[in-house]
Image (cartoon, rainbow, N blue to C red; front, side):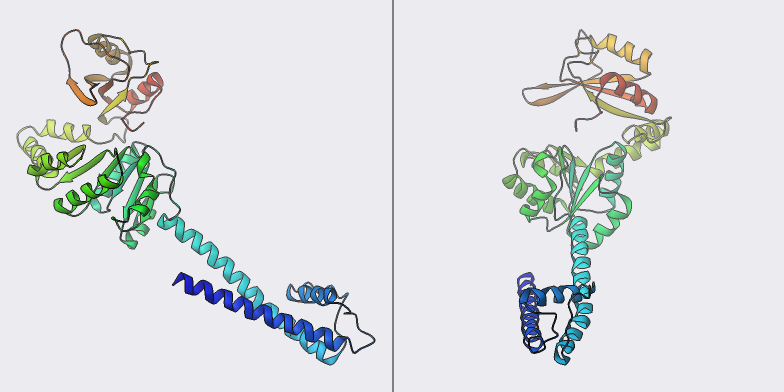
Length: 353
């Protein structure tokens, strides 16, 4: 379709040029018959043509014969069509640029971002928490109407959208997926998710894949297929529901902790990477616990060490445990404590740094 439209435009342009060349030649022929002529050469004729089409009308050259003036009228009135054509093409070009940006056809330069394959109410809820935590997100959807909905909520600096079939991996590459931190596969059912995980692993190496499962029994299957984290929505909701029944205050606190804290009085759990300049690097866990509580009103509840490429979570460890560079500190804090930690650690929370 695009090829045919391009050929049609080229053909129309050739016809228009041929008409103007013919009229310019006729103008020179008729004007050459008058001794009062002001148009003597081809250069003069072209200058008159341009001045007339652009409606500048310097008046230094003009036709003096009857037929020459008729051709001049043609030039004058056709300038309206030329202007309309030019303005239309500019408007069409600008509209195309806007559409390409909205549909994500130009790609994104996001790095260490989250790529979400599939859009629905659940992914919208996840994105809200990610945006609240200052993360950039790339969304792939195959429904055109979803693009308009997403653009109503998020700006281009926060969220990049791509309109594409999920299996068109050449287009998926426009999300800069190779430099993403996490890819969340958010398709309709577990079978579709598993097939997609297998396919995308064949195309892109070393992706950190996350899925949510309707059937928690498939967790091991997904992990064997290369998924980093497989989360059962039913398990989480059932545990939270049971907690609301027999320990409602704990359940309320738990729900707050696993979400992003939007208000200063709200608490949540975060993890910070320990860099070489971190004042807690080399410090015993117990001393760090006390110092963090006293200085920042932050509670240290765990430590993550990377051993042989695997993440080992030490939950409130006992004994002589030291905090080392490239460990992660798992902490519970409010917004004020978070701001204090950022000033001390000079790094944002999370593994998506």
